[in-house]
Image (tube, rainbow, N blue to C red; front, side):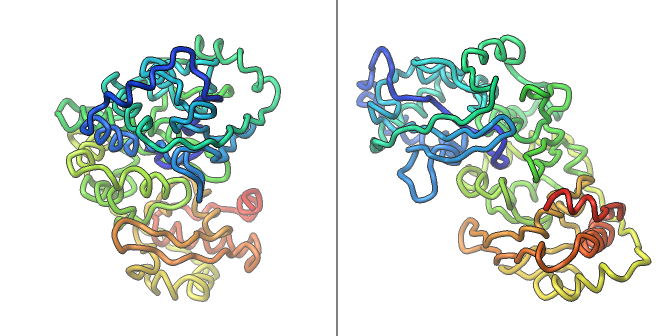
Length: 401
């Protein structure tokens, strides 16, 4: 799941050159294996980092920024020069499992830290699907990294220190749905890559699995069972969100929108249920109601009525196909206010979702209101509709401009 999408997303090989070409494997693949590989490639969200806007499928070129520098999604079409056309199924599995490509070590921007949990059978199916795609003769773009991160050989030492088989589970369960959901979330969807905090060297913090991670100006929220219940999520709501991008708690936006659009909306009903089951656990907590915090300052309310109520409703009820509800909105219920602040500053592009559902574009207010006014608006939203303390300061807004 590229719950979202992202500080450390998918990046495969630097070049197309393999040592023991075995492209005949694709010719031996059955239609059933290729079809299964197509489903798994969507579940693994391969397109998010390997298909650029307007570009050929899986031809790479997606820009992936991080605090270590800029990575670029690579060409994973069966092109023999620039893609993976000369890779064998064994080499493909080694790249997913160990982060080793035929020509050298991969950076952990490619989430082999999660993909190493993928079964060989599923790896072979994705390989068969990719080898059945149309080759694209598009050169790869080398990463632009700061020293010492541009010393690729050093990644071997990073692996020795930080590469683990799996993070501890964030939820508890034993049912078949929980077990399948665990595989979908941890191996294929690689949720931890964005939703788990990282250390100084970019390593996942195993003690805080799925407790939220910073992605620059935005944050991947805490998606542990306690945190989800505290923000009002139920299993049915999570399934609706993953299937359509919209639930009563809000819509997918920022890095999570492409995760839904390219990946989770394509999961079948059983897998959607399993994914929700794993995130909440076999015995989910009851969703917490919102307890509004009353504010004496009316400035935030006036700002809301002036600029927000036309779309989100006078009482925060939202409008179908236009704007999500503010009342009980999951983003407003987060203790970390940065996603709300950045949304108000930058606006949100129009969002297409599964079927005919969509949300209209939200305008940016960075040039409309001062830091003090935006802090007043954000505090009103958080307190009134999210039950959070009105503790956002103008300096906090200024730091996120």
